[in-house]
Image (tube, rainbow, N blue to C red; front, side, top):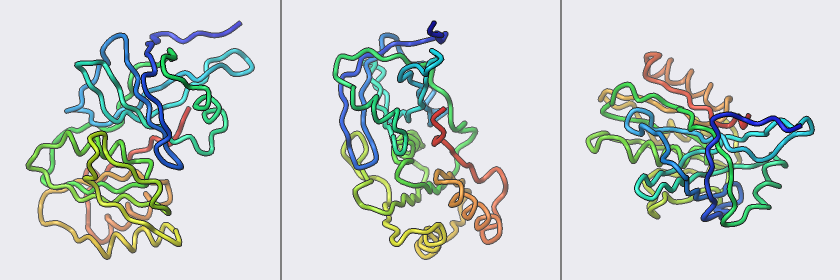
Length: 231
């Protein structure tokens, strides 16, 4: 017997496309409005049911909310399936008009207070989160972004077609080269600042140690965002 989840929402796939070699873009029309507080929580993931396992238990994957049109109840989400074979199969079976089940959005970052300057540092998987975060900052905030990848094919524009972030190719790739490239391009601002790290664990650790030692950051100035766990 299949186990069912509670508090399930339903939505219709109205658009789906593979954007890059590593990412997909989906538009979902929700039946009821999503309960979001973007000003307070500029980052959300959406748990989506992609099927059942052999024991009949629902299988969830968490997708990044990229943008939400509250007037039309359309959510843009991005998916980075590699190396998830089960998720690849689910994406291969998608078609417009398909009804999917999703759970309530989960908050990623609590924007407790605004800073004069932000450093957004992450790999290509962090792009949609950084776009959303950047869009909802006060106009007066300065943003220094550092999005890195091994290949140019992993970068994509924001939903409006703009490229507001700074993109860097790191090849040959190593976590140390990522940090070295950042150090050569950025200096510590004299303004009140916050740092958002959204890379893999090894890169995040290198940057955390670097900022603590060389920039003398306080603990509350550095936030690590982890949205890679699909379960």
